[in-house]
Length: 288
Length: 270
Ligand SMILES: Nc1ncnc2c1ncn2[C@@H]1O[C@H](COP(=O)(O)OP(=O)(O)O)[C@@H](O)[C@H]1O
Ligand SMILES: [Mg+2]
View 1 (spheres, each protein chain N blue to C red):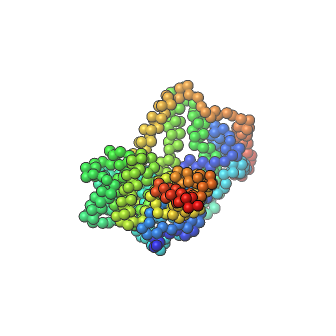
View 2 (cartoon, chains in turn red, orange):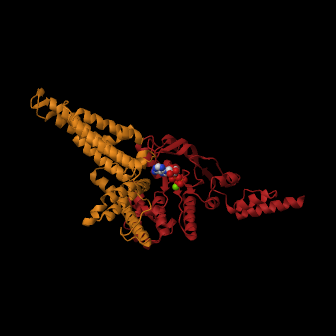
View 3 (tube, rainbow over the protein chains, first blue to last red):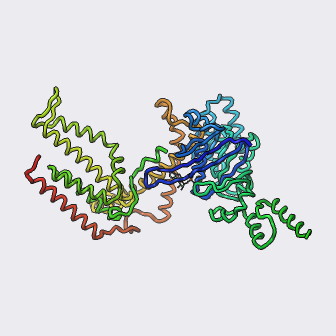
């Protein structure tokens, strides 16, 4: 697999030299591969937002490096700015950044800043609107008349319209109802499939990331204690509990079964995997 | 982030005797010290004033570095005042170049003036560094409460001040966040001519105003839900109470003023 984004010994200290000084990241080595769907998970205050704001050059490291396509993104001013177009970042509660008179104009803000011509801007705005399920009528209306969930999808479309190779979303489903959550996750999935883009989804809900991602990175107290495919990560059930993260309910049930003495694989997290694990267990038992 | 580094209110949390002192005492001490400064007219008086303030800074554990850093923005004023006093004080001439001349009196008055400004700034820093904005407002409200008799809305003014102080960090944080979000969409706040820069602020200011209004609205509703109806008959969670060391501090302040006046009568130069 080809590396697209990478941090080397990345450290970040906020408010250096004041009584409020705080090390939010400590010597972090993080890697994202091209085309993967990556989840970043961690407790509130663990440093997730700080980490991702380094990935597109919004925060400058106080130590270490951030590499995009193998080159340091702080090499030159121009490179930092270009990185922002290749690595799209959707902030937490992005609906508070809307400012234009119409939804259409707001979505076109990013593409216009990239200096694209009118035709290309129009194509991208319409395509992005389609990804998040906005109608033509809504495009011409004011973003401030939409519901919370719709506003959020407009904001996400605003970043998707820049067609970034890496799309990072900071807790995109926070504060939404279950239907809204499903819609957003589906929109992100569609963008991933259509552009073969790298997706980095930040969350503090294990249930949510477990269902969607290929690989998981756990952030705790400014460090990355482990990463890997979800099943691998879920083997560290106890440590995750101690970090206040927990594992999906399904995994918890199987951990409990294992603790009761059953010889069963405890790293499952979907219904299909659970079914398979139970079947395997029965087959083994029957054979004996 | 550059915006974050503006520490408004400048409060440095701590647990020294200065931090624990009643805010009213600290405000009165500051006023007394400023009064004493203006009564200083000779070297011994200034030496006493410097010694007292140095002692206070040491006790407060604020640190000389923080004070020097705070002094930087007013450095220009200090220098200009010094230069003006140096050249424009009439008296016994010791050096002359064209219309510029320096007198003995000029040197003394420049030195005194610079000292006076620096001491004045340091002592007000000491107040704001060791008192949280909320306590400062509480103290001011209590001290000014006699003005209610002549219908000055002291409580309302203090409430407005507390709310403003409470929301400054919130709004700075919000500004930071919106700026980052728009930068992520390629907004550029740092280059271009004046018109371009002003236009670049629209994506920042519109969301900021919307959120400020939303917050104001929510706060008003929350206050009403808790039956806020102005200062009439309102009691406080944090009662301000004078303690023995507050009284001691005020007595010391009175002694400082007396000492400065007495030192001013000594027949010493100048
Ligand atoms: N702008 C900032 N200034 C100072 N400290 C900050 C700032 N942003 C975050 N922090 C601190 O850094 C730590 C990590 O924060 P953050 O990256 O936002 O965590 P998360 O997104 O995982 O909740 C927290 O302890 C937080 O208080
Ligand atoms: Mg966060």
